[in-house]
Image 1 (spheres, rainbow, N blue to C red):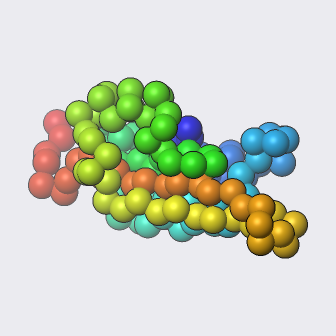
Image 2 (image 1 turned 135 degrees about the horizontal axis):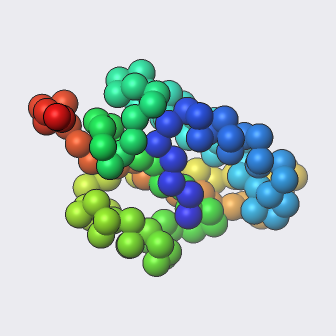
Amino acid sequence: MIKLWNGSQVDILKQVNPLMGVNQLPEEVINEVEETINILDRHYGDNRHPEKDLGGYLCIQPNGLIGDCQEYYELLDMYGTTSDMAEFKESIIVHRDSDIEEAEEWYIQLFIISNDYLEFP
């Protein structure tokens, strides 16, 4: 599972992605992640941190449902959230080498863990 919350992390992911071998994220997934993170950056600032500031984070789970990962449940517990609290859940199907039969599923969830009505000291 991958957790991202700002554009600089997406930039790093794009740089290291070619080095990830079989764990490389498809371009379609990175594009979707970048688009969503850019929206968070525009609305909540690009130097925020989900534990301290407004905004949230995005989870990416390769090859299947995100709920099959123990790390995912630990992350939900850390923020006091449940999978039902996700702002959106998206499944991205990626076909490799133009083979319709061989496809990978990537699962993305967005969690907004604070709101605009909270005040920070």
